[in-house]
Length: 419
Ligand code: AMP
Ligand code: GLY
Image: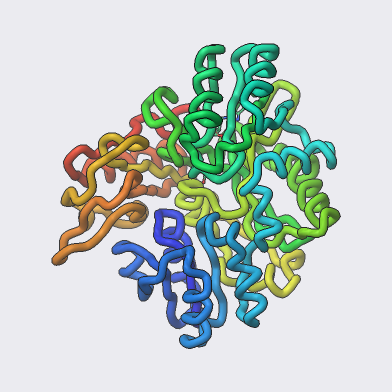
C-alpha cells in the first residue's frame, strides 16, 4: 500500500515511525514532513493547508490511504474534500472537527449530553465578559474560542490577570479572530490527563492514558506551550478509571456527535481533569496530541495501519488493540524564547548518538548541506521506552543530554508527578 501522512511535526514523525513498521505498507509519503521523517518517508513539499494540491497528489500517486496529523486541514475540510473526490482518508469532517475548532460548540455539546465539564459562559461582548469575570472571581480560566495552537488559554490565579486576558483577547485581539469570542470557565483542580481514542462514528477504542506538561518551565511555571513533554501510561490511572472515562465521557460524546448529525470518525483527544468529583473534560481535540503521540504510539503493539483501515471500513469493534507492557517518556527540546519569539537556524549536534529504545522525533527542524538545524519553537521530542517509568525517564534524559544546540531548553521534571 501507499500511504500519505499530512503534517510535519513531532506527532507526524511518530505516526510515520509507527506506520513504517507495518509490513503492508510499501511506501509512505509525508506532506510536508521534516528531516527526521525523511529518513522513513518520501517528503512532498505541499503545505498542510493546500487541500486541493494534496488531493491531486493522492490521485496522481495512486495513494491508497491518507491520514492527517494537524487540526488545521481537518477544520478546513480536508476529509470532506478527499471523500468527495473518492479518496480514502480517515479523520473527522470539518463539521465534526468543530469539537476542537470551537470551544463554545464543545461546551454546548457537553451541556446537552450531560458530559461532566467545568461551568462556563461564552461572550462576544467585552463589558459583559468583564462583569461575569468580576462576579465569579478568581481563580478563573479565560479561553479564546477558536484555534490558537494550545496557547489561547489563560488560567488566571488573580482577578487582574483575568481582566488583562480579556482585554488582550477581546480588545487588543492578540489571537486574531480566535479571540473574538471568549469562553470563561470555572477553574478545575486536580491531575490532568489525556485519553486518546480511535473512533469510527460509534465504536470507541481507547488508547493508553498519557499526561502532557504544558507550561514551559519546571514545576509548571511560565506560560503555556503546545506541550513540553509527556509520559504514558499513568501509574495512578487503572483500567477501571479508563473504562469509567469511556462510559461517562467518550461514549456519550461520540453518541452526541452522531445525534447532532456530525458523527465523529478519527482520533478523538479528550483532555481531562481528575477532580474530587470525578473526571471532567477540559477540552477535546479532533486529532492525535502532540507530544502525547510520541509516547502513546511507541507503546502500541498492534499495527497502526490495521486499526486505521478497520476504523474506515466499520470493523473497529472486532479488532483487538494491544499495548506493550512498558512505559514511555518524551522530553521536548525547544528553542530559547519559546513560546515567545525565538531564533531559527541553530546547528543541532549529537542526533546520531541516540538509538532505540530511545527515539528522536523531529518537530521543528530543517536540513542544510547535511546539517540539521533548528526551525521551530518545539525542535525535537526525545522519547525513551523502558520496562518501568523510572527506566524510561532515565534513558530519556540521558539521551537528551547527548543532543545539543545553542539555546536548547527542556523541562527536567517530565513525569515527576508520577513519583
Ligand atoms: P486547553 O487548551 O483548553 O487544553 O487549556 C490549556 C491548559 O489550561 C490545560 O491543559 C489546563 O492545564 C489549563 N486549563 C484549561 N481549562 C482549565 C480549567 N477549567 N481549570 C483548570 N485548568 C484549566
Ligand atoms: N499536547 C496538547 C495538544 O496536542 O493539543
